[in-house]
Length: 170
Image 1 (tube, rainbow, N blue to C red):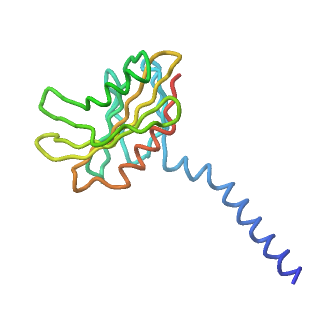
Image 2 (cartoon, one colour; image 1 turned 45 degrees about the horizontal axis):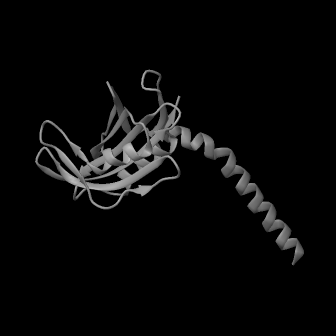
Image 3 (cartoon, helix red, strand yellow; image 1 turned 180 degrees about the vertical axis):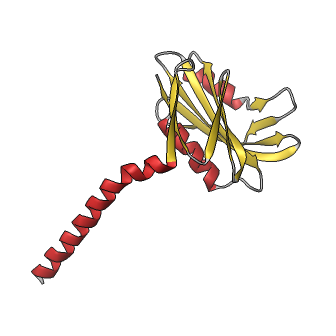
């Protein structure tokens, strides 16, 4: 009985070591890092999303997934100011509009998140926005994923979470 237990533990230990050895290289194959010194941010994104730098951030699109991710870096004096901006939603000159669906939820001491709905190019869309504040610089990064309402799914959320989780101010 003790021999079977020992043998099982050796096998499990070997499997665990293999997983630990493979896992860093595994994630590197599916994620890329982007650094932008002028914006003062760095983030990791899934390789199936393609970032395009803009004046105040990035827009990312995916070849096989409808929707986009927008990253905007702006100056905020406090988390309260960021919260006010996020509550107002997004209104673009072309008429695109996203409104907050529910209360913003805190993400640690320096972040907020919420679900949004609205229209882009007269199409109903759903979005999820996360904001992160760098108290040292007073800059904040807003990251939102937007997709047609009927196509919004966990893949969109996963891509956003990868970016938001890894976004740092440099």
